[in-house]
Amino acid sequence: MMILEPTRDALRALRVNVLRSVLTTLGIIIGVAAVIVMVSVGAGAEAKVAELINSLGSNLIYVSPGTTTAGGIRLGTGSLPTTTEDDAEAIQREIPEAQIVSCTVRGVGQVVFGNLNWSTVIYGVTPDYFDAREWEVETGRTFTSEEQKGSGKVAVIGQTVCDNLFPGQDPMGQIIRITRVPVEVVGVLKSKGQSLGGQDLDDAAFVPLSTARKKVLGGRSRSGRLVGAIIIKARSPELVSVVEAQARDLLRQRHRLRPSQDDDFSIRNLSQVLETQAESSRAMSLLLAAVASVSLVVGGIGIMNIMLVSVTERTREIGLRMAVGARGRDILAQFLTEATALSMIGGCVGILLGVTCALAFTAFGKWPAIIQPTSVLVAFSVSAAVGIFFGFYPARKASRLNPIEALRRE
Image (cartoon, rainbow, N blue to C red; front, side):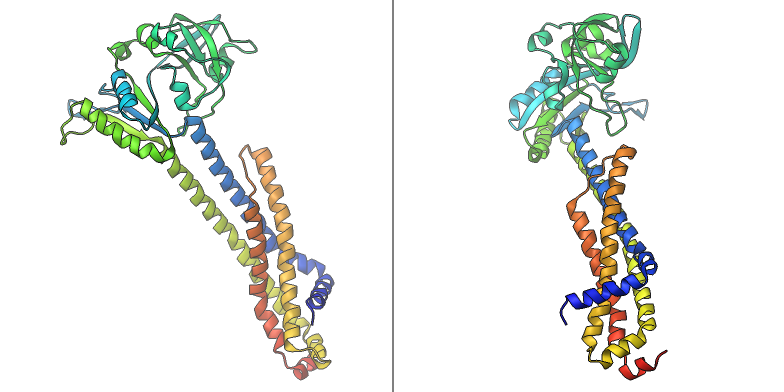
């Protein structure tokens, strides 16, 4: 018997009980749709993490001051000022794998323009800081080496600061006061969104490091050449661990630490944190897909149940077909084709429903759901496999009926 004949017979049998066929495929439809939506949401989460990596800057290593103990109480990171501009210059000079090395100091202060004011984070940075963090300007420019050396009164602001101080206005060339020091706005950064901890990366104002130390920020930032952090950008992701190890050895040597002494600084490899975040997102995506796959199994059990009922209802028909020459494998092919057709039809409808839900999730949920062709193909293939697997037992039972006993069945 050719493949077209059992297919035609199977579709004809399914049309006899349309409502029952639709209800039977619901499990497959929901299962396939759930798998596509969950995998798409998971892929969107991975894309969100990748976007976050780009916003923070890739291949970055953060060196911050160490900790100290006072009165038996161990204070937090940064309580022991140890990192200096000289350390940064040494890293840039002696570690070829370090592409960019930048220094920063940090504080919080009031930024004022006219009758508007805004409290924000103030960073004193070197000109190559923006290249290390891969931050681009929306309008204007960043600092020059001359402005850094001459403690120029210039500032680059984030989008949040711009929106609060210059609503509907052009900030370029305007004079703002940062902790009562007048500076000129020379650039506005592109929006970066939020950090891993939920901090608004756009809520910041940047001035040259020398300006921050001498004019804008007080306290510890004025002390010699101390800096709050050193940012190192490796030349490639593969070199991050190498640069980190070399920087640690160099700083221990410069700080004259004995082998038995702990580091008086802290080094963080940001890529490791974000890679862990990405792995967590992938694991969650697989978990969600596995949970959604349970619906496919439930749908397959529903198909087996309906096919067993169908075999019972059509026992006389099966006996009649055998009596006129149909072989057992012909009966097996017909019922197996019916089960597979049910499953594949449910798979197609499930794909349409899943894609529609994923697009709706993106449009209304404000979260990227990336539809992957691979997940669609896998979901459809699994739906067909479910039909074959769960439909085989009823089809085999039908093919092994005794024609004489089948004809006697009312």
